[in-house]
Length: 155
Ligand SMILES: [Fe+2]
Image (cartoon, rainbow, N blue to C red):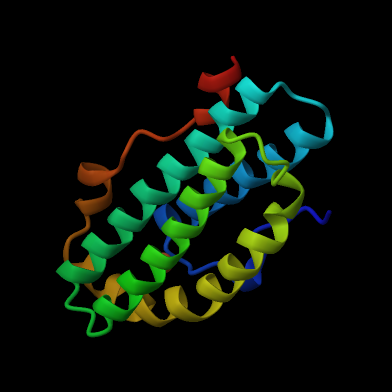
C-alpha cells in the first residue's frame, strides 16, 4: 500500500483549501496505517467516521465558496463530490458490517482524489481566488475548527 502525500502537483494554492485537503489525506492514511498496525475495529471505525465527516464538511465548504464566486461549473463539481461521498459512505457501511475493506482504500479513494485535486479543483481556483481577494476575511470568519482532529481523537 502506498502512502499518499499531498505534494506540490496536487495543491491548489489556496491555503485553507490545501489545509483541508491535507487533513483528508492524513485521515485516509491514518485509516490505512491503523489497519496495518492492528488498531481495534472500534478505533478504526472512529477514524473512518472522522474521515467521512471531514470530507463532507470540506465539500460543503468548497461548494459554498464556488457558489459565492459565481463559478460556472458548480453543478458538475457538486456531482463529482456526491459520487465521492457515496463511495466513502459505502466504504463506511461495509466496514461497519465487518467486511475487510480497508485493504482496498488506497485504490478506492486516492485514485479519485488525485484526479479530482488536479482537474476539478484546479479549475475553480481562479474564480475562488478572485472572490477571496475581494473578501479577505471570508476564511477567518467561516473556517471550521478542524485543526488537531487526530489529536482530539487519540490524544
Ligand atoms: Fe472539490
